[in-house]
Image (cartoon, rainbow, N blue to C red):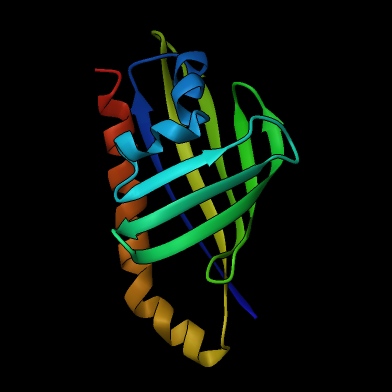
Length: 142
């Protein structure tokens, strides 16, 4: 099985503590993650479910929180049929009451060579989605 890494970062006009409150309020993910609705817990070992798609066309991303360090890091292990791997958000306070949010994903590609070939098409979309989501998150604090 192959793994690929993808990440994006944004500086936000708010402290890590303030951003954390929005970031881990899974029910608010639809405000900033395109085409996504989520729900879940707030502690290591808790489950998170996210539906990404439009109407009935999409996929369910099931996760387990593997690291919970308020207000600086939340990490998940993707456990779904389609999405497997690890993801995390890191928050770093910056001068002036700002913070940097980094979203990192380490995705397990299925199907050997076919999965790697599929990443050529899906990878750019994944990168775009992460960047777009983080820009939308930052706008919530402007």
